[in-house]
Image (cartoon, rainbow, N blue to C red; front, side, top):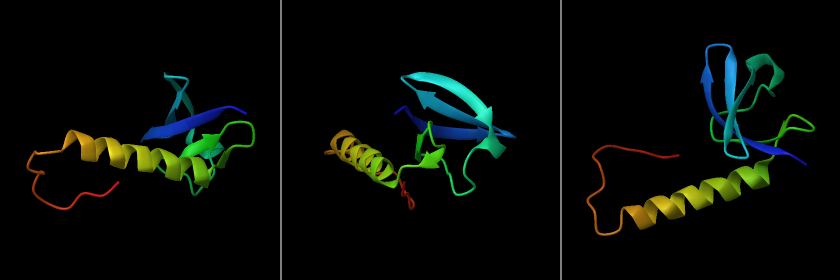
Length: 79
């Protein structure tokens, strides 16, 4: 099972990260509910909610470690 992270959308293309490399796919080939930061199963072209939540938890944890003893930037921010 091959997984990819949806990095961003550029017009009608979706930029995915697969094994550390950027690859593009037509935006229309992705599930309509897919959004930036989601983990996709490339075999079924579906969003993997469990893998997405694990990735988001890792990012939150890394951000917390990076911001330790630093003043957070102003404003609201949520991933």
